[in-house]
Length: 196
Image 1: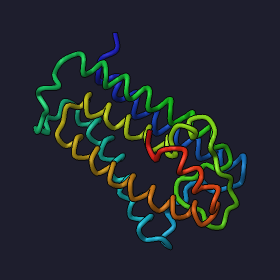
Image 2: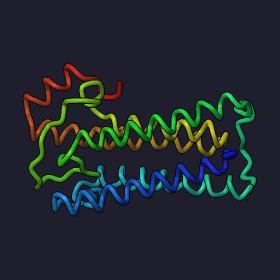
Image 3: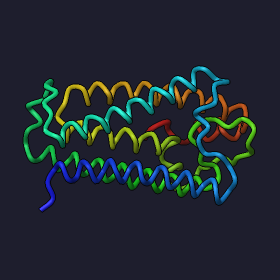
Image 4: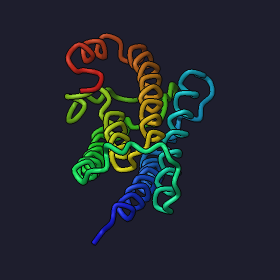
């Protein structure tokens, strides 16, 4: 039988493995560097992405500490019911699958960060017909699932920091998309909500 700790380790390994492989295959398939968040030209975007990477790394550290049975205190004891474990696993799975689907639907347009010099297309089909930012919604779902599984106030704080970083990244991306696509993007914004 798989324990909660086994699932947490599997999830974090799967998440990291997927993002690294996705980035490598994307680069080899299209010759485009998908990791644009390291660009320091736009300070707001740079710091929002660095903050998000730090939060995701912190979730990984929390998972490792949980698996090693290291007591970091600050527990949300009202989440100690099996039903919360079920929903935590459910949200992490739904979020991961949603992230993979959104990446697939973006095709060549996928990037982590704004790439001013690269021609791109406006993706508005599939999940992007429901949400303008399904990848970020998926990340937030996964983080919420981890809060339920880790039952930690620190994880809850990380979720809120992640939300702030995502909002910062989205605001920068929306400015770029309005400059790049003009009226097409404004019409898309009128039809499709920012999150869900």
